[in-house]
Length: 45
Image 1 (tube, rainbow, N blue to C red):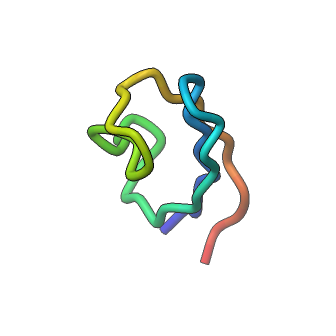
Image 2 (tube, rainbow, N blue to C red):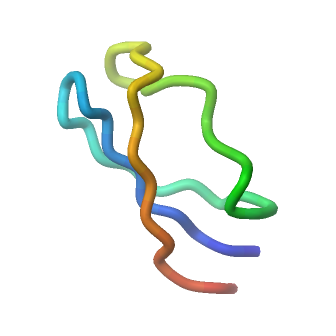
């Protein structure tokens, strides 16, 4: 499964998520609840 690094464009909170594919995004930022997110591929595990 790939690990993605996400950043909230609203509050700049950054976190990592283990997701099944690149089309799956977290529903919202865990910091502020915003849905304005950007994601970056980190690695496969």
